[in-house]
Each structure stands twice: as C-alpha cells, then as structure tokens.
Length: 211
Image (cartoon, rainbow, N blue to C red; front, side, top):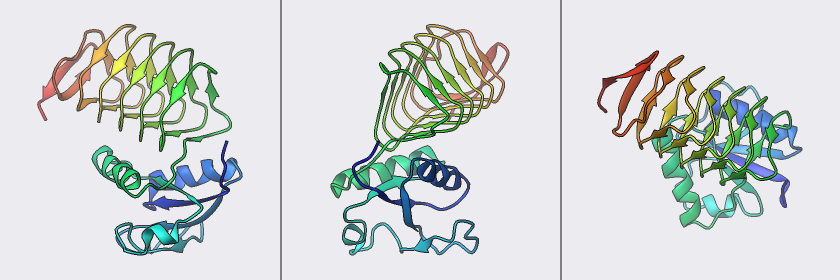
C-alpha cells in the first residue's frame, strides 16, 4: 500500500481518530499531528508537531506521508492544496475490512472507513471521506472533497459533485446527478437530479435551504 512507513496527520479530533486507526491497521507508524493548538485530549499519545504553515513544516514531515484528517470539506480542501503546493507526499487510507473493486479509482488523501463497499469502475476524487458501512455502486463518480456519511447507499451510475455531504443512511437512486456544494440530510431518498447547491431532505427529498 505504501512506500513510506511513517505518517503525520493534520488535525486531531473525531475524524482523525478514525483515520489514525485505519493507518495503524495498514501498519503505518503514526509519528504525530499538526493543529492550531495542542489537543488537551490525546487518546493515541501522539506528539504535537505545531501548525502546518510553520516554516519548518516541510522539514518535519520529510520522508513521511501527511494526511488531512479534518471532517469539514472546505478545510480539508485547503489542507490538500497546501500539501500539493509544498510537494508533500500523500496517501489513500483504506481500512482492511473495506471491499474495493480492482477497477475502482480512488484519489489521494481520501479515507475509506471500515466495511465500505466500492464496486466496479467507481471513481472517487481527492480528499473524500467514504464513511463506515457506505456503499458506492458500479460506475459511480464522486468528485473531490465530498463526504459520504455512514450507511449511505449510492446505486449505480450516480454522479456527485465537489464539496458535497451525503448524510447517514441516505439513498441515491441509480443514475442520479448531484451538483457541487449539495447537502443531503440523513435518511433522505434522492429520486431526481439535484442541479443547484443547497440542503435537501426527506423521502422523496425536497430542497430545504439554499446555501
């Protein structure tokens, strides 16, 4: 899975905790974390390494992967771009319990959590979160920095734009297209294309608010 064995994390809270366990399940050595402040809680006994825009950042992470482990899509995007600008090596983290088709494509700095299924010819962008127990069916396309929450189901040929959030246990019908910057509420059922950004909830889902 990896050329390096060492990894640092950007962020150290709930989402990072899951990512750290996935990294360790892949036998990566977690060296520490970067964040605005030192975390009072330190459940994994990690070293606090400062902030990622420190002048010494690139030197500190030399010969290691760096993973942006922030739940907020917009912040994760900024961190991913920072890593690109600094030519810092990134990685895909995939839990060993996930089922990933050999024909699926997954972008850098994406986290695939336990018990996920990603099936034939699916494509997932950079900096995405494919959360626990979700299903991404054949030929789905998920663009950069989108979060698929636990238990969500994307039927075949679904296309989801950038910076979207698909809530827990939501169901997206086969062939649906969803625009950028869309939030789908937990348990919602999407039966029609969503062509504008906003918040969509219910069964069948309707627009609640525009972002």
